[in-house]
Image (cartoon, rainbow, N blue to C red; front, side, top):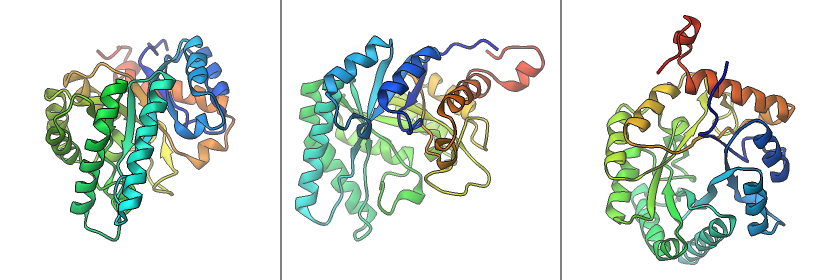
Amino acid sequence: MNGDLSKLCIHTITTKPWKIEEAAKNYAEAGIKGITVWRDALEGRNISQTGKMLREHNLEVVSLCRGGFFPSKDPVKRKLAIEDNRRAVEEAAELGTSMVVLVCGAEPDQSLEESRKQIRDGIAAVIPDAAAAGVKLTIEPLHPMYADTRSAINTLAQANDMAEALKSPWVGIAVDVYHLWWDPYLEQEIKRCGKNGNLSAFHICDWKVPTTDMLLDRGLMGEGCIPVRQIKTWVEEAGFEGFNEVEIFSNTYWKEDQSMFLDKIVKAYKEHVLYDMDFVLNGKQAL
């Protein structure tokens, strides 16, 4: 089956065993056009040279992951978090991308409302740096199971509320199907996000049934219960024209030969993101 890979992006964390140089070479050889870089992949490297290397492989650097983790009861830790996010903005600019994805954080020893206030204040403090660098701060709402320490932003409605309150063109939102597929208001909140011009990123994978690890057992598209293609239709109807970013944390897949895993990613992308397999099996290509 042929398939257009021009909007396929893969996160470096997805093929975690590969160094970024290996990932770039193998993604490019597979015809993939986008890469999102996790900050750990840049350790010990010249960031601007790494960005140049990625572009030499004809890869667009879609975003840098991750900033965030703003909340804390300790004001010193909150200040350190803001400084780390400023560094993330600098790294993104050096790398040659215009987006930093924020995993916003949470503090289990205080209310979610207080954590959300600290997230809003933290992002507001970094907006001038983001504007100066031309880098968008993209809020990623996380599944409620992560509301203890990873993120107090757990629905797209909450992310929309925060982006609208901040009123900055340098703040956006990432829709990740793994975190949001369950939300009965997802379609209307995606429309709201698009209407306000805040829809900045779209992350895909699948929710395996049963899931054996809530962090490290994500599935390939089509391997679980998330209606990935339906959600993709909603984000496109909301005006999104960016990359479809494959973000899979999986102890199972990280143990595999990563070249074989990459082949599986491409196949799953073609079959379950680009095409509706019911149409394909009947000899028709879905629109």
